Length: 293
Image (cartoon, rainbow, N blue to C red; front, top):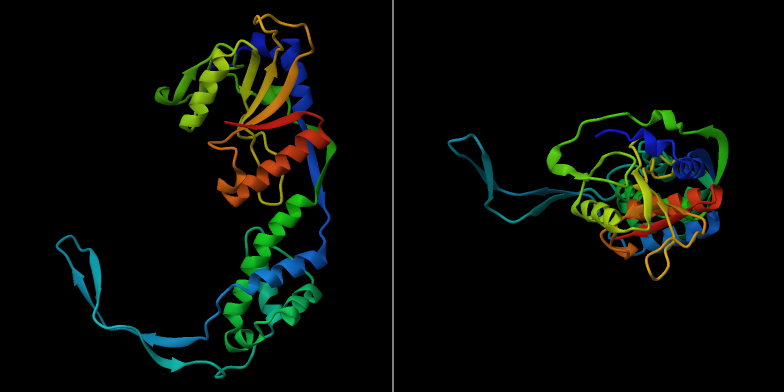
């Protein structure tokens, strides 16, 4: 695929790039009391079983190719109940260690962790199986915290940019995964899913699409749940009911392609990253951002 230098030199592409290329950093405000409340509420619905040693009888078969197959011969039987056999660990310290060993590491104050333990109704389970209790709290906390971080995030420009000179002049792609393009900054567009391929074909058919670019992988927005690489940047020309340009200023926008607009069907981090992308582009850069199918 080859970069169309004549497209890059057009005023509308320069304007598009100027509207999206600023790098940002984010800051976050979290309502700690609400985080504690929602975490405690979520913990109530988690089953925490007491620790025990369980035995099962099984036979292992090995076939001619060396593959193992385990055949269970008896149901599980509790051999030893471990409740009360070991000293109770420091729960706040255990949770702190678990949070710091996650990716990315999370740090919460000891006071917040102690408050969660103090408010939970699962104190008996915490005494019976402290490690499982701490692990369950950490899983809930990370999930809740990710939502709180995204909801309370604010972006600001840092005086650095993605330079237009970073666009590769040419790069290779599998021909079966490429759509020839007349309106793209490159002479063809590589697609990674059927929805992307259909979206590119739709852009090529639409006369109001002045030009577009599939944003390169190095074009990233920082978020609390990992860097976000938006899909498309588009220059849109307004047409009247007869299909003729109206002369109105071009619309410059960033678009993210999804198979559905129903966010409850997305993976949690997909939703969080697009929420951050919307705040980055619309609030910090003043550029329209849309989820599209």
